[in-house]
Amino acid sequence: MISFAHSRSVLLIFALVFICSVSDARPIKEVPKLILISIDGFGFDYINRIGNENIPNLLYFIEHGSSVKYVKNVFPSVTYPNHMSIISGLYPESHGVVHNVFRDDYLNDTFHLDAFFQNFDSRWFDNGQEVIYSSNRRGNGLRETGSVLWPGGLTTIKGVQPRTIGRAFSGNLSLPYNTRIDYLIKWLTDKYRPANLGLLYFDEPDESGHKFGPNSPEVTKAVRRVDNALGYLKQKLNESGLLGSVDIILTSDHGMLSVDKFVNIDKCVDSQWYTTDESLSTVLFIYPKKGKRLIHQ
Ligand SMILES: [Zn+2]
Image 1 (spheres, rainbow, N blue to C red):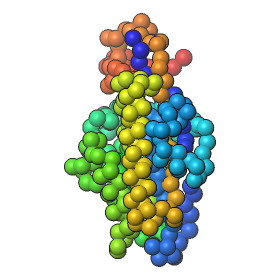
Image 2: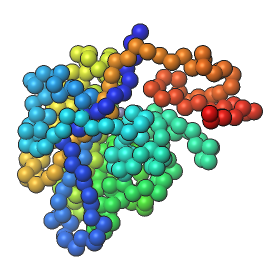
Image 3: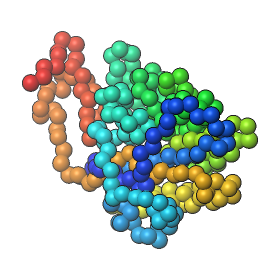
Image 4: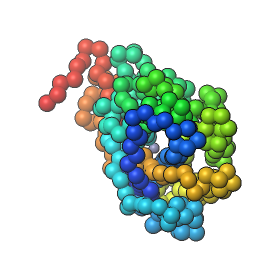
C-alpha cells in the first residue's frame, strides 16, 4: 500500500514582504495592492512534471515575475502550521498552530481542520504573533485585508479581523474557485473602502494528491483547475484595471511525496498508555493517559 506524505514545496513567485509599521498617510486608494495566493500541496516538481499545456496561466505569472525552484516548508509539513507561518513569518512553536489536529490542555479543547468553524475562533490563532493583516492595518488605519478561506487567517488576530466571505460560506471548501476570486475582486475594488491586501486559498491539488498520489492524472486535473482559476483572476484583474498595478505572490504550504514506509507505533509503545486525535498523519501527536506521563530521554 502506498500513502502520500508531504515534502518540500514549491514557491512559484516569492518575495519577502515587509509592511512598514510606520504610519502611512496616503489615501487608501493609492496604497499598493498585494494578493497572496496559496495552492495547497503544490509539489516543487509539479511545474516540470505537469505539461505546459495544463498550466498556461501559471506560466504567465512566472514569465512576468520572479520564481524560485522550491522553498522549504516548516515542520510539521501540514496545512495549518504552514499557512500560519506564511502569514506570520514564525515557526509553529512560536505562533502556536502546531498541527492540523491538536489538543490544547489549557483550553481543554481540540482543534481539528475538519471543524472549519474553528477558523473563526481566535483562541486557536491569536497567540501573540503579528500576522500580515494585523501589520497591514497598523501601516495605515484604513488598510483592509480580505481573506478567502485562508487556513488560520480568517479570525481576529492582534485585534484585526480581515474581511471574509462569511461563516456559512467560509466553511465550504466546495465553493467554486471563480466565486472565491469574485469575492476578492469585490473587496479590492470596493468603492468606499477597498482592500489593499488579499489572501486567496485553493485547496487543490492537495486533496487529489492525498487521494490518488502526487503522480496521478487526478493531480494533473486538479492543477489544471487551479490554473483555470488563475486565468479567471487575470481576466478579472484586467477588467478592473488592476492587472498592471497589483503585486501577486503565488506559493504553496508544502509538497507531496509517495512513501512506502510506515511506523507502526503499536510496536513502539503500548496503545493502552496513550490517546491520539488522529491516526493517519505524517506526524502523530500522542497524549499519555491518566496515570502515565511522558519522560524525555
Ligand atoms: Zn496543505
